[in-house]
Length: 150
View 1 (tube, rainbow, N blue to C red):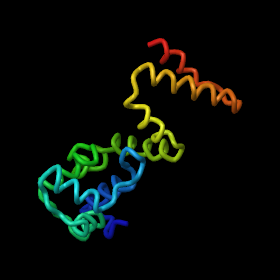
View 2: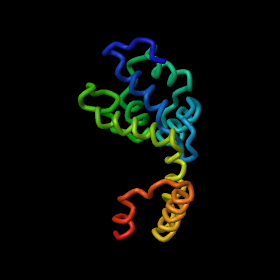
View 3: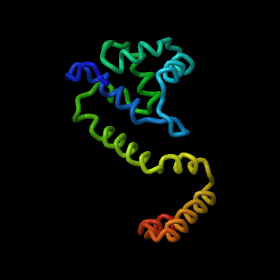
């Protein structure tokens, strides 16, 4: 999706990756309109969806520091993720890849819905998952016993 994949388009590559991996609480990828609206409502920065698309594709490549901070905050990454060299952001990329893998397997939907539950509610969900795994002939992960004790 990025127009120019060169070193000078770090912002475009990273922004494209964020749009391709980070989801809202319902598991949907953010639209350009949603990001534009959030920039305006949360950060007081008025940028059109078209402008954000141009940043994402590398057509525009020199956003203000305020725009960079707002985009980073919106997607939940440090602003250095949008600016630093590849070695400095490897762990964030690894976390984003893990997020993609978890989403592919439906894990993030379950986790997001269980996150607001009390500890007792979370234990109940974990027990239900273990029961379903047993019913389907799948082993219960070894670390569950340690987690339930803590």
